[in-house]
Figure 1 (tube, one colour):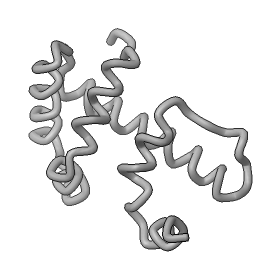
Figure 2: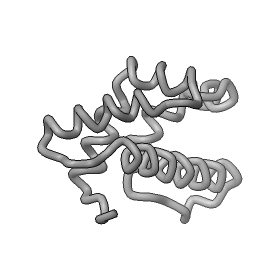
Figure 3: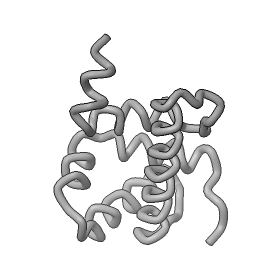
Length: 104
């Protein structure tokens, strides 16, 4: 498929940051229906992506985030990614270990 633009990724993250969507994603593996909703919401922004593209992008962003996060946790601050802060706001609370870190 064609590359995601910065605006497309921002829109995807904005939808993903919706608490409702997050809860659905956290509670399931079979998430085609959720990504169909995400794709439908992207179309309202004029972004034409199907659910598979959305899911793949979501997985890739999540994977990249996790690898940057674990690198940073082990002291490697040079590793970074474009949307780290946005994703950290969404994913940073996922594990109890990370939650206790962000309190201070």
